[in-house]
Amino acid sequence: MTELAMRSVVIIGAGPVGCALATLLRRQGLEVDLFERQAESSGTGSGHSFNLTLTSRGLDCLPRSVKRRLYLQGSVLAKRIIHHRDGAISTQAYGTMDNHHLLSIPRGVLQDLLRDQALRAGARIHYGQQCIDVDTARPSALLRDRDGSSTWVTGDLLVGCDGANSAVRDAIVAAHPNDMWMTRDTIAHGYAEINMDYRDADPTGMHLWPRGDHFLQAQPNRDQTFTTSLFKPTASDGARRHFSDLPSATAISDYCATQFPDVFGRMSAVGEELAGRSPGRLRIINCAPYHHRRAVLVGDAAHAVVPFFGQGINCSFEDAATLASLLEKFQAAVRAEGGTVASVGEVVVDEYSAVRVKAGHALAELSLQNLAELSDHVNDPRFLARRALERRLHELRPELYTPLYQLVAFTHMPYDAAQRVHQETSAVLDSLCRGRDVRAEQDAIIAEFAELYGSAAQLASPGQLTTPAKRTG
Ligand SMILES: Cc1cc2nc3c(=O)[nH]c(=O)nc-3n(C[C@H](O)[C@H](O)[C@H](O)COP(=O)(O)OP(=O)(O)OC[C@H]3O[C@@H](n4cnc5c(N)ncnc54)[C@H](O)[C@@H]3O)c2cc1C
Image 1 (cartoon, rainbow, N blue to C red):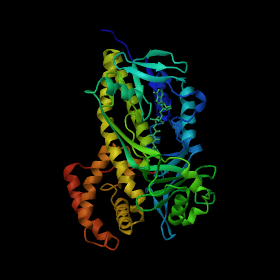
Image 2: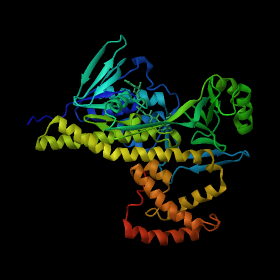
Image 3: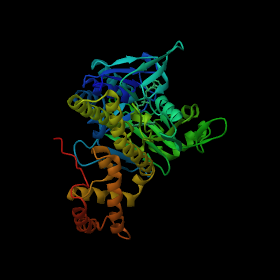
Image 4: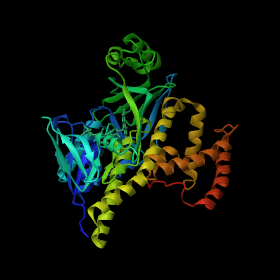
């Protein structure tokens, strides 16, 4: 038997997830080579300019030093600030603990920091190398450089971190259609960034203007600017795609003046700005399993989700941490008991897939469902009364109930388990709230829930329903 611990990993894509994974693997002493399609100077991964919100779920997967550096460069957002149609403003805290906040960080800043960390950890990044094919058995990737010449590179494990349009994934599906399936959907909503001078606004929350099936969002940056984006259904007139019912600069301008009168004066050029470019498309890409032989998919290459839960990259960092910890575990086992690189690689990716596919698919569903919350529900008094009830229930009986947002953003409960728990507890709450004034009868409903669900939970699986996070001081 050839006894060989795994030594080298080839990662395709030096975006945020590829770089984060490279750092984690270097800490185990593995040789890590990243191959990135773009030139070194282009820097910011896939080229999107928007901010990313990180939550403790994703942040906890990164080394402590990286997390500290991110906090130095990002903005902490502890609440949503809702701008209602009538001009009123209300706030909704994201959670109940100190670590229940979003860390909003420009994509380029995150990318630069993670790339810097990967290089410092000893990973090698090769730019201008586009993956065009893979062989999952060796495992190898065929790379084409800027001059058009191609070379195969081989490692003990091949990881596709090459984003939503993953060439690694597409090559596996094309060569092994019976072993990996994939679906690719585009939703009607698109998004566009808007220049808005919002300097004097509250920088401690995510500003949101929910307006039915569309919403405006402004995320504070550390330099007192805001990154503002409009999310709205799109339509195509044959020649170009635009926000629906807004085919011209005048229509866009009138729409913003009517829908967002409180900030319209701060986006003076919005008509020309949006009429000049097509809204970004939002895709959902699912596949399963996330591996083939000794090749594995991590991050958006495995699951591209719509951004309405702000969890895409958090989920991706969780993928990276899961893969790294499985590798560490199996490396130790192989050193103790013997084995081959091939068998370790295949066992690791198999276990990784078994855990992460369920999580990725659940996040895709949860993210789509949250569109309704951002566009509409946060404006609705009945919805707000229900959220107030849930929050109070959690404060009084955290062992019985944690709101979905907290489970998803601030715990490490797998997304699929969070989804299941939420479906169960929501059904109970729905039946208790039906036909009642939820605000006026909050205490009674909580008492009934505790009585009903408390005993049911004890019978089923004590302690399984929630994982409240610890207060961080
Ligand atoms: C509008 C929008 C808002 C979002 N907001 C949030 C948010 O607030 N919070 C959050 O958690 N997530 C958010 N996301 C999701 C987040 O952007 C992704 O989850 C994240 O970028 C995934 O990182 P990645 O490294 O897997 O892929 P990418 O960032 O796409 O990086 C892939 C890398 O691979 C390279 N590459 C591609 N193809 C090849 C190839 N063939 N060969 C070599 N290299 C290649 C690319 O150049 C790139 O550097 C948002 C997404 C969108 C669209």
